[in-house]
Length: 260
Image (cartoon, rainbow, N blue to C red; front, side, top):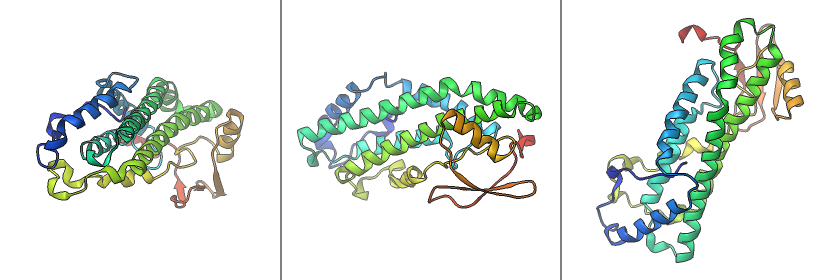
C-alpha cells in the first residue's frame, strides 16, 4: 500500500533521466504486477486511515507521536520519490526483478496491516469514547479495548517502518542523488526518513484504573507491554523499555477531552 500510481506532477523530464524513461516505465509496470491489490485502492485506504487517526485522536490514542494516516502518506511519497530517482544504470536485470518484488512485497504487507486496523478500530475506539464516564464499572473491558487497539496500531506502524528501512538499506546506493535534477517537492528528497526510525512505545498511551490493572489484562491476552512504574499520589511515571523514549508522565485518559 506504500506503492501506487505516480502523480503526473512527478514526471521526470530532465537529463539524465530521459535516456531511461522507457526502461523505468517497464520497471514500474513490473512492480505493479506484483501487487496483490489494485493500485487505486491506496488512495481509498489513505482516506480510511485519516478517519482512524481522527477517531484515535478523540481518545488521546497516539503512539510515540505517530499519526497513522500521516505515516502511511509519508511512506508512500518516500517510495515514489525513491523509485523515480533510481539510477537504472546501476541495476542488473536480476536486481531489477528483486527490487520490484521487494517493493511490492512490503506494500502488500502494509496493505494487510492497514486493512486489519481499519476493520477493527471502531469496536475498540467507540467503547472507550462513550464509556469513559463510567470506566470504574467496566475498567477491565476498556483496558481490553485499549490493548487490542494498541496491538493493531503498533503492528501497522512497525510494518511500515520495517518495510521502509529494508528498501532504503538495500537500494539507497541505487538512487540518483545529484541535487541539480531535483524539482519542486523533491528539493527536500528523503528529508523525512527520520520518521521511520522512531520506534513505537512499548506501552499504550492510555489506560484505566492503575497500571497493574492493565498489565494483568495484557498478560491474560498475551499482548506484550513493558514499563517500569513509580507510583505517585494521583499520577504515574512510566518508563517504556525503548532506547529512544524518555521518562513519560502519564495523565489520566481524556485529560483534554473538553477540547473535542
